[in-house]
Amino acid sequence: MTLVIKGGRVIDRDGERVVDVVIDNGVIAEVGTNLSGDRMLDAIGCIVSPGFVDLHTHLREPGREEAETVETGSRAAALGGYTAVVAMPNTEPTQDSIAVVNLVRSLGERAGLVEVMPAGAITIERAGKQLAPFAELASAGVTLFTDDGNGVQDPLLMRRAMEYSLGLGITLAQHCEVSRLTDGAVMNEGSCCSHLGLPGWPSIAEELMVFRDIELARLTGAGIHLLHLSTSRSVELVRAAKAEGLTVTAEATPHHFTLTDETLRSFDSVFKVNPPLRTMADIEAIKVGLRDGTIDAIATDHAPHPQESKEQPLDQAPPGMLGLETALSLALGELDLDLLQTIALLSWKPAAIARLGARHGGPIAVGRPANVTVFDPDLSWTVKPSLLASKSRNTPYAGRTMRGKVRHTIFNGDAVVVDGTAQR
Picture 1: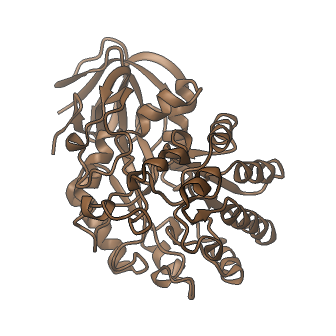
Picture 2: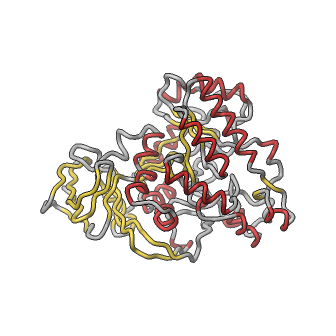
């Protein structure tokens, strides 16, 4: 059965045009005007773009299914316009073996809502002591490796990881945190932290590792992707590295360009994240970095936690917040970017970093895999936690009215979201 996306404004790397898109047997079969098919999806007044790719999603399964499962996280992703997500390896057991990687991948295939690409851990059990079997995992299709949640503290081990990565066709992604500087920290170190009497998390804990890994990239000739940048100095370091031609990429989360550490004055742990929310000056630097290309991608760091965990005292509650269903709206509403720039940050740029460009983020063109997002950039909606697809409810945007909403998501040629409703 052929599917036609009718009357939308297509925006991709090739530019903009108002056309119909016909999908048949999982691929784009025709692009033009006055086209017909067996089933029509109305896209009048909407943007039709390559599907979004999230570089940084915590699906929790296996091991923490009370917070999220691959199925529920995939549904949230599809509703957010994503056709692929990189599943972080801090599962129980860790994604440091083919058995666990294949389990997560198979759970994603069973859900059938988005492509779930399991990330491999850089070190065994993310413990920072022994490198994971990169070559073995790469041969099983793993393209991105990270110990996310932990930074690789040992510089010699990280150097070896970079050297080992050369020639394997993989991306190393670093959680930038010098842990000795954040021991016991609850929130950003600054005036708000001092006023509240809470242990502070200094910016330099991130910046030292950003600097170290940039220098290791220079030394080894390997690339490095820097996760969830949160400080102005980190942005400056990446900008300088790129100006030198080093192979360094970076991402930023919506919460790090929309929320400041002042939100913690409420002592509400929904605002506790890792790295912590920073200052307005840091937010402005992140926005500039996204605008000028220093930061390559918007990544959600979708981190679900059950309500009882987040209701603990602030110093005991786990860090993290939901992000998949609100990322597009926050990007549209908070960043001074045109639609082409915004879609690039959500789609083909992260797809390239995750090495998924053959299947995701490509132009809306005949013969391409039909992974497509259709969204209304002007639709107003209010975030209601109970209506989100995640098993958890820890969104910091509850009650907030946003602009822009996904209308349809097409994954592998199937309409998995139609008129804002998941079909599975």
